[in-house]
Every structure is written in structure tokens, then in C-alpha cells.
Amino acid sequence: DVKVTQSSRYLVKRTGEKVFLECVQDMDHENMFWYRQDPGLGLRLIYFSYDVKMKEKGDIPEGYSVSREKKERFSLILESASTNQTSMYLCASSIAQDNEKLFFGSGTQLSVL
Amino acid sequence: AQRVTQPEKLLSVFKGAPVELKCNYSYSGSPELFWYVQYSRQRLQLLLRHISRESIKGFTADLNKGETSFHLKKPFAQEEDSAMYYCALSGWKAAGNKLTFGGGTRVLVKP
Picture (cartoon, rainbow over the protein chains, first blue to last red):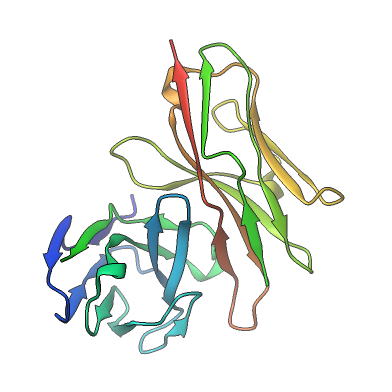
């Protein structure tokens, strides 16, 4: 059974802080994704990666960066957190041969005060 | 640009009644469409995809290219169908396919 683990379930940070959200998958998946989930807006893609040290911008990358130094780990970084980044963040992974079957983590609810 | 629209934020039906979740998309090429579901306190997961033409948990969805729709249907709703449902579209991108999700529809099945 695929396991995608997000390090924190809840996070509270202050405006201007640098925030790290960590995601680890244990099934050797090539692809990893970061989405944010907001009521009424659904899921919006922030960044994704198809390989180690590779990253591509999604639809809303502004204010975020990512790091993929190892295949199993994909980190989302908020360089200077702002209140409009308060959201539920979802990490997902998939195999290269079946891009669209995503396996999601349980999410990190981030509150920026 | 690719876009997915789910016009209903909330659908409330009685157990045993039919349920239909609407999904409309815009995409210039030939898309692949999916439905994802998130049950209470569970992770978001794939429910079904149009290319498989399968019925999962009694749900079916037909891709209608003329109407650019991919509505999800179930003839007899059950209480365990209460969940958040997301329609998603995959369009070809040079670096690989990526999914675009709709805003989601919350389904509440009342006893």
C-alpha cells in the first residue's frame, strides 16, 4: 500500500517566517506534486517534480519554492509566509507510467498569523 | 488553458435517490477526465477515470465531448457516499501530464 507522509498535520506560523513542509513517499514513485486545497477553489497545483533535482512550476508557484534532493522526498518552502498562504497543503505522488493516478498524503493545515 | 468547473458546491439527497454531480471542462485538445473522492477523515483518492469505462462503488461517468462534460452518476445513493468529490482533467503538456481540478462538490446523503 502506497504511503505518502506529510510531516505535520497542523502548523501555525507568523507572517514573514520561512516555512518548510515535508513530504515522503515509500513506493519509489517518480512523480511528486504539491497542491493547496481551498474551499470553493478545489486543488491548485503549486509545483511538481518528475525526477530528482527536477522541478516545474504549477499554476500558482508565486511565493513558493521546492526541493527534491532525494527521490522519496519533496519539500515545499514558503520563503516568507503571508496570511494568504493559510491553507490545506496536499502532497501527492504517482508513477511515471500512470501520471494521473495520484496518491495523496493526509495534508498539512497551515495557519499564518 | 485547461479549466474544470463543478457548478454545485453542495448536493443533498436522500438515501436511495439518484445523484448526479456535474462537471464541465474546457480544453482545446483531447482530454482525459477523472473523478477523485475524499471521505471524512480519509485521504483524497482516485474514484474513476473515463478511459477505463468502469463502474466503481455504483458510480459511472460518461465523457461527452460535444457538451464538454463528465458528469458523475449513481442511481441509488448510499449514506457512505457522503464525501467531497473533485472532477479533474489531464491535458498533454510537454513535460508530462498534470491534473487540473475543479472546485469540488460536497455530497450529503441523508437517511
